Length: 325
Length: 249
Ligand SMILES: Cc1cc2nc3c(=O)[nH]c(=O)nc-3n(C[C@H](O)[C@H](O)[C@H](O)COP(=O)(O)OP(=O)(O)OC[C@H]3O[C@@H](n4cnc5c(N)ncnc54)[C@H](O)[C@@H]3O)c2cc1C
Ligand SMILES: Cc1cc2nc3c(=O)[nH]c(=O)nc-3n(C[C@H](O)[C@H](O)[C@H](O)COP(=O)(O)OP(=O)(O)OC[C@H]3O[C@@H](n4cnc5c(N)ncnc54)[C@H](O)[C@@H]3O)c2cc1C
Image (cartoon, rainbow over all chains, first blue to last red; front, side):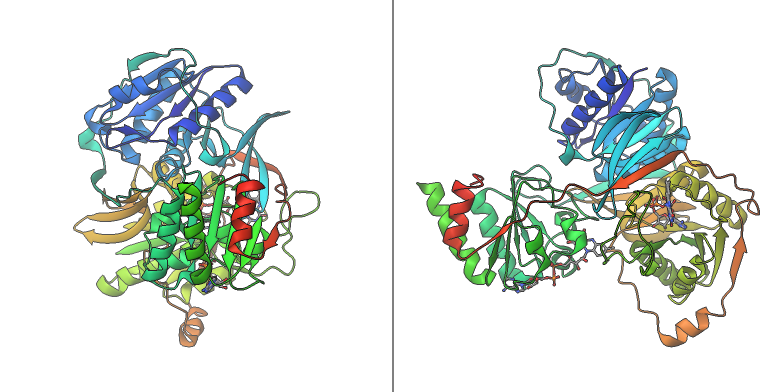
């Protein structure tokens, strides 16, 4: 039996996290010896489906029906549950974004299915597929099996490469959606998004993060300059978010964003368990902290014990010089 | 307004867990357990609502007798009474927890359920959404701000890239994110008062619940360690290493 990937759209665009999730779907389908379909719901889904048709899926199903035109967990989970029941999918996946985390457990509830959150890999075991997922702020990897006929899971986007086009052509069709828009107990009102010219935190090759050590808005500006010199995304520790110096969705950590860039530069961050959980899979970690005992140095590949207000301006200068030459 | 707040007992999140050698779980000896931090935000929000417009907050904790300590800590934050659902040594993952919470909901018929967005030990982030699905209720997860109006809640939710505003009909299920409020510290008089508040001890059978585990943890293992790093003496050395050794610049 085939499996289903629920892709993600926002404001008419397919979100990037969908592409690593497609790779996860492909891997899981291969392990199960089956195919995968993609479901795309929301305004612009018909055009979006065209973008997804050469990623290796057998079918790409889309709907722009009124009830699902804007995302609500209520409508999207109901539409997906109906489709899963009709087609007999044995597994349903989505990226572990804030949307996937909102949607998938509700879908599991509707399907009476077991669920694994934040899967980072799959194995074949004696009892079927074994899902690997981090627990305890990444300090343990759990091997989990699901005991229901349908499996639900979210997958961590940093654990899978983004799928690239060129893998055959899927059949694209409109999905039947019979959710009654009037009967829903929830209504989408609006987005209040923070606009930024910088790369998205979870997609960037380089991330520069500010911790409490940056002190104030002036300090944040300095870290922003470093990020811009490197073409990097900006991240933050919770301390900085709590103080209102940077928006919440830039928080890196166990309860914020999980990032795995090629280079992560932590400036004035102590390295609390919850922060490290969000960045320890970066390829190269640099820490700049004036306290040589700071736990961040335990995970840093390169540690510089220095006052960031001295080191970061120098670093910006060096990077700009290197870029210019 | 009557508000239900499920609270989970978790190992102190600021202490790195140690795994049992056989991978069946974590070492619990010498570990102190606390109220799941996200649940403190949920309690605070619920208590503020009742302080403003009346009503009561009841807590539910599912586990063993030791969860009474968790509940007393929650009651000291202003909740009025509590349920302790004793599993008699059994253990359930999120979907089984949601089965039990749904049974409590049906007994009490609260106007609102507020949970933490995730349990900081398992990081599942599932119980609330599953509960909402089982009860056919609307959900508003990762709340940043909750505004109650006539028969509905308008919730600003933390999402990737900013906020989303959603309207849900009551009763509804809401989960608390970290900017929802600033939980109070329990004062000594509040802690004393909490000792006298009602903690009703029940079993899943008493509630008419038939919880099921739909997923199972086979075992835990340590993640691969990062290789030891090095200290650099200057910005020049750092840039040199990033360019020539790590080749990331
Ligand atoms: C439920 C829960 C969830 C959490 N989730 C997250 C999460 O997802 N992400 C997260 O980040 N945190 C999270 N936290 C918070 C976490 O425990 C820490 O409190 C937080 O990460 C600390 O941020 P920080 O390192 O910026 O600040 P601090 O720990 O205060 O560290 C500041 C560092 O800056 C250094 N410094 C100061 N001045 C300078 C200078 N001039 N130059 C160089 N260095 C300097 C200091 O030496 C210090 O090491 C969570 C906590 C809880 C309870
Ligand atoms: C095989 C296995 C063994 C386990 N062994 C143990 C064990 O020995 N000891 C142990 O304590 N746990 C154990 N657990 C985990 C336990 O079952 C969790 O309570 C369960 O996974 C639900 O929490 P969660 O992290 O999934 O909730 P999440 O979905 O992340 O939590 C969201 C919210 O749900 C509410 N919530 C979650 N759990 C409870 C609860 N128990 N009571 C009230 N409200 C709750 C809270 O408001 C919480 O903020 C085990 C799980 C499995 C699968």
